[in-house]
Length: 131
Image 1 (cartoon, rainbow, N blue to C red):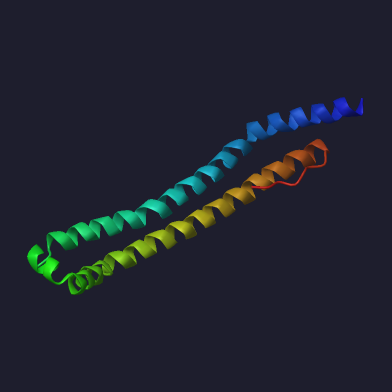
Image 2 (image 1 turned 90 degrees about the horizontal axis):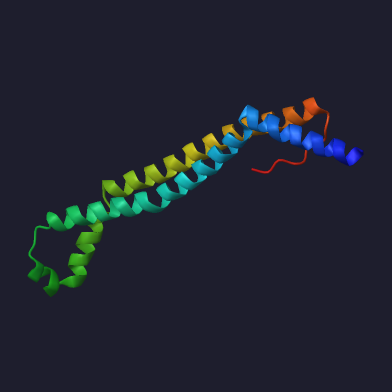
């Protein structure tokens, strides 16, 4: 009898959590994490590629001079790469990380309130919520 009561409480809790949007919040929590990781991976690479293309396009010397003096010219190209684009990339990556952390924290707080409130209303003991 007790097991069926626990099972019915569990079913009720699942339906209430679904109704209150708990699972949507958990999905959004995971989506923010995946979007943040994509930005962290590809934005910096994209800015470096753009700056490399711009540096090569506006390269003031000929390619023959580049092949004659590869070390000094490579240094020149690398120095031109670490320009404003580097700092833009740095701020985009850190800004995205900070925004993602703040959003995930707010979503985790909201989801935990829904989770624990639902179990409190049912009079059942809630398991630990791990997001």
